[in-house]
Image 1 (cartoon, rainbow, N blue to C red):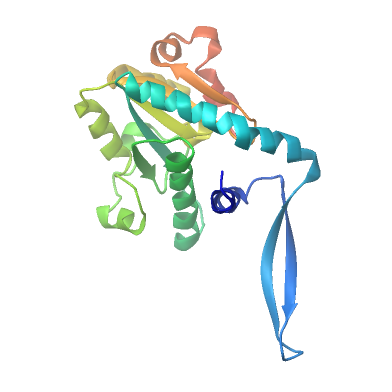
Image 2: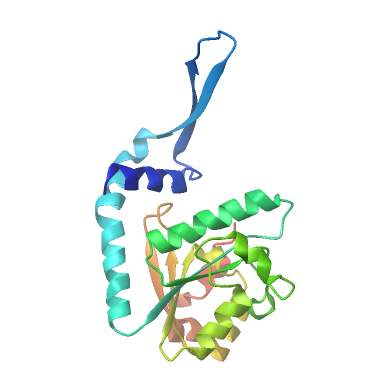
Length: 224
């Protein structure tokens, strides 16, 4: 990983809990003027875990994603933001960061987003009032939730959905089960929990529908 890549990685993960924010100032010619910049410092207790994450976990995960592509799967990413009082600009900045994470870290081939939907809202009912031009503000986005569903149904290949955390997809387990039964082209869901838990889960469609090992309830139990 180059210094530029590391800098980009830090920028996209600076909201995580293990970054401490410091303000640095640089004096100018006028005593009354100061230049102010944010400096995000990784807390010491997380040094070893993050170093291992960068060196081993990310490349291993990316190799696995590539092997899935080589076996004939299409790998897509999905992210959402809740319906809240967040400003439009803040909302879309946050979505853009998630899009970059899905592309850069998870190597997805397409990304679909839901700019304003709650985690328990049924997947089939999301983004029905969303205007297409709203997504034009985002880079590398291929559509909304309804566009994702259409893409999956029309795909001639099996599709894997990658999400950032369980609630990045849904916390409505009954709806998720119904969704998987209706949209049978989805072979698996990959839940990227990095770097909060340093763990990535691949959940098979049939296991989720059958609730094997209580796997589908992971989505409900991870409500935050």
